[in-house]
Length: 88
View 1 (cartoon, rainbow, N blue to C red):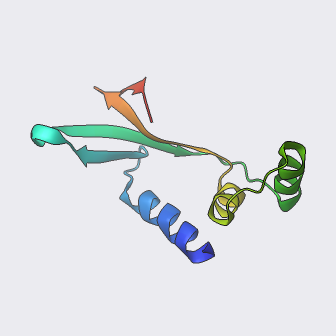
View 2: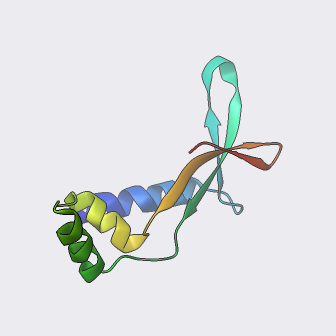
């Protein structure tokens, strides 16, 4: 599972341009520019265990791995003429 999460995040990052954007081919041939940002923060094992204990749940293994790489992300925020208009 660790390699899957790592490969997925790195694969997405490899598609981003220098501004952190990706071009998506949409319906009817439209091309949409989207912004992708990853949090520079990382969750620790202690953070995860504390959260799970507080909320009496167990986070999926792949999600745990993701938040130890980037504790959050904004993926596919729509840009219109370079302006972030949300979504994601």
